[in-house]
Amino acid sequence: LEFHAGTFDMAALTAAPGTTVAFTGGTTSFSGAYTADVTNVSGGTLTTAVNFNAPAATSTTAVLNLSGGSVGGGANGTGPGLVVNGAQPASWSGGTIAGSVQLIGNTVREKGGSGTGTVSDGGLLFNFGTLKLSGGQIALSSRNATLINVGTFEFAGDHTVSGPGEFTNIGTVTKTAGTGTATLGAPISDGGHWRVGTGTLNLNGGGSTGGTMNVDAGAGVLAFDAGGCGGCTFDLAGL
Image (tube, rainbow, N blue to C red; front, top):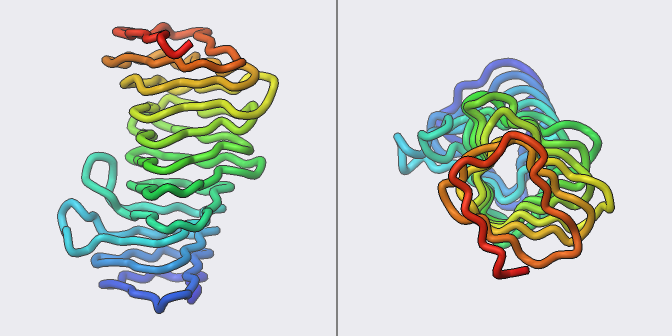
């Protein structure tokens, strides 16, 4: 099933098991539940129902492959627009998260390629699994763009997460590859665990954690380059 162009305002869609739904252009929105095993977005706009206001209209996909266009619905603070709940790997090589997307389950989702994956104004990316940044960068492109990490956020190379949006870490941020410098240039909040296995992870976006930053043992360097850190408490017991 493919949406190439035009405008579609749909009540709901439940795709048969094994079906891939592709969005390559146009504007498609759902007021009720959207359910598919695999969702590919390479162009156009996909907007799913706001779960907070319509609990029966939870939109889910086992796999989300985002290479262009935008995924919206459930704007920042209003609940999940799209829940990605499968055990299979998924990819993010470009495009925009313009609403709320939740990544749940013990699954690796990867931002790869050389392009930029964007979380735009009002966008909220909630990671409960493992989100691996192995290529390009992630841009939190406005102050009202947020990435919340409850699981593991992995810098698998010398890559960048840029602000001015906020990066909230409740889980673990780790650097596992690259002998150079990875940069977290977005303001950080909360604390969580931080582990640098190789090279340098440079935190230069400032922020105010309001919690404890637990710095775990690693062969690399956790560096604060600019911006300061208001209200930070450091626990170095893991070193």
